[in-house]
Length: 464
Image 1: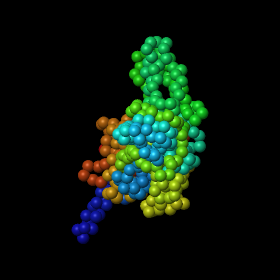
Image 2: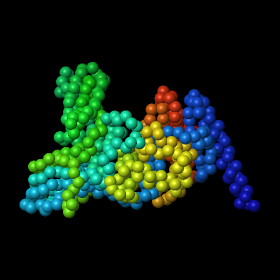
Image 3: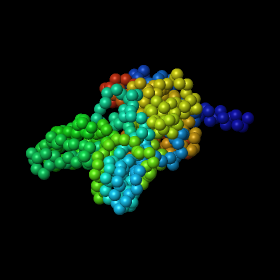
Image 4: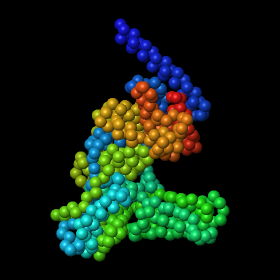
């Protein structure tokens, strides 16, 4: 009887909390002048629903899709899983000379950046290699040749979020364009491509002006044969701080190969031949290996900054581990769907076309995404790593400038955005209690979509 009474007291208190909270949240929606038909909202406390607005309606999730992708990847791989990038040669190095090709074998590492390239090149340097008499070959055969997943939005852009995918990738297959005022008014701005190599051609059409605060800089990337040209135009004030623009590249295999050539050159290793795309020769042996970061760190890159490139690289690695090479995206999606089968999803009840969410064809309900978040929360093996990878409100990632000091700071959540689509989903921490799970989704017109973020932030603030 005592336990029954305790249960009734707890249940009654939870219901009172839900009722009071629901009233406040409804008032917030009205205050922001939102039509509830454009919203999918769901909040639960220890598996019990405490707020629901259209939570069973299928909606476009945008990058909230990465919650599902991240959960499936963490479930499939050990947390210390690493992806290796290797340099191989079929013939030995003799008196500093390699009388053959040096082959870079891509291992699908989403975290292979400049630091990793230096690690690889320095390892080669210690072999005594000084000159390569053959070519540099880039072997990307761990993945298939589809650089842009057919499940993405069909229109390609040159912005970094739409970077191509290859088993041999470098610096997220994007370049940083740094722009500073020129030496004098009227002069061209100083433009730096980072990292710089032969793959990129720069056309500088900028001008330094005297007007304070002026910055009308633009950059575009166009194909120039099998390479890319970066065109930078516009004006920058002579007293303006450095500006940076990020652009994707179009040919990741040549991109990484040209960078390898440049990094080797800087370490005193010369190349007699050319950079080409070809499989490593049979019988070639590894002379240098660069392991990736641990899987949990790579996943954090994906979640914190909503990195589409990392999400799709990880999905193809799921395929590479579970099907015959070269890995295809459809097989990676199948592995994610198998995880969703285990969670309890019926395949007819959702649509997954792209693992990063860069599409309007994906469909999930707020309640389905909450089920994934709850499944993660109840799996101690992966929950701490997933939670630490999420953006922290007012602190970092895509939530760095939202819900800052003085507002709710116990929120760790994934964001999502496409034109007319806004999402926020994750966990609201509570002192001396378990976190609440929430999923907020908006699907509507573009203009009203820009107001969905402050709406969601205001909804979160009702939990203070």
